[in-house]
Length: 134
Image (tube, rainbow, N blue to C red; front, top):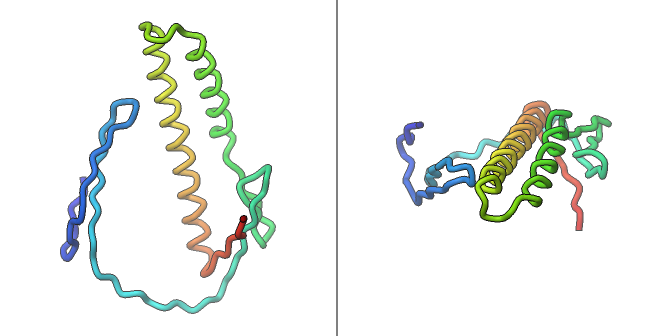
């Protein structure tokens, strides 16, 4: 899928299969990278919020998008249907695969949303401080 750059040493390789039957290969490499010091100009603090993802010191409130919350409802319904099926039957197996696909979709949506939010914070601010919850 992607070529390993020059100077990278392959340390390990992991092959994994998802419950929906997809295979993934993860390759761990090691390489030398020079750390460049950057001047700090903009700082933001993030606080945990019970009803949302976080609240920033700039009073920006981040919450999961509507389509993600709707998908969680669909997943709950699919799991309810699965729990009512007779374990081991053909319809139970089909529903189990449907639930696994929904789990994968929800996980991908969450991962994508968090990636976009973290990228947005990293590009707009030099330092991101996060509240420490014990």
